[in-house]
Length: 473
Image (cartoon, rainbow, N blue to C red; front, side, top):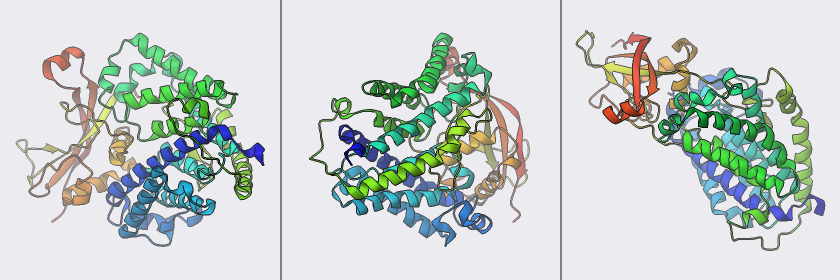
């Protein structure tokens, strides 16, 4: 079945497989470090309570059979090890069924984590990794030809990521249409990075050019992913360039990195060969592989109906799945842009009966703004789940964030796993007695303020967010 083979995309497949494998490594490392305090047996949103109420058919996961923190760690370590094998290229020489089993295990393990991860795993890059990881099961080892339908299915995935994001912007906030959204976005995005202050301070003319370039990259360029070469390569280069700019200007987990990896499906060997000097060693045809690829292609085409319909809908959903296995999804981001940045600051005191003279110490998170003198750090493509949800928490009352009050309780207990999610423990000699949360308005300092004070942020107190509470002892 030579018509199913893409002999000019051997390098693209290699880059895509290695890239997805590397992102799996990061994702399982995040689970290993953060899942237990967030979702474990004693976590903020314990998995055992979730699986007791949500049926398997609605959220398929190995943890419906049994959950324990030890089993979670075993799954995360297994996924981490398999991801490293993929990055090293070890399965490339294995028989097709065994190589596919490695990819299927990676996908199944991460699906099991995402489907019980609740709000902490509700981000678009989770479903993007699962969808890409599912397609990777069928890409085949290095000794086979790259399957042509998979190349186009990967481009279809990139198309939905980019075009969906472009449409949600045009249908959303007016500032995307009048080209002013980036007057605010670099300052108010969930987690700014070390360059965000500088990018925010660029002239407004450049910010308007940024928005216009974004519209071109997301609404026009994706259509050319399906064009013949070298047009598809040029389209891929534009997507790689714009996603790289997002990597430089913000912390968006692995969203931008995996999009860059997937965009490599638009590069043929002639293009990639200019930067990679390796090539195929006489790839072979495989009839079983061809049959599986045909079956997968038909499945994706059928499942693409609802995501495609969603793209055309005036009520477009973003970052949504239409099946519990997250096989073909819809994507999008920042349909609206916040114009002001609010931060929830958690602070506590060792006094049992706080007075006006009490010392309140702030809990500093690993990346989210807190200390105004601290430069925003770089964490992406690693993902800090609690930091991200703290950004969402500032939009509404804590009663709408079921994890927030349990977080305060864990900090009052001095729970080591929970405190380990933070930058440091302000109470190293013992847990505090009273804790509260307050809402502050943050903005980047001006160049003059930055020169005079050394501060990256300026903040103004707004109101109490959560009242002072304590544990009954």
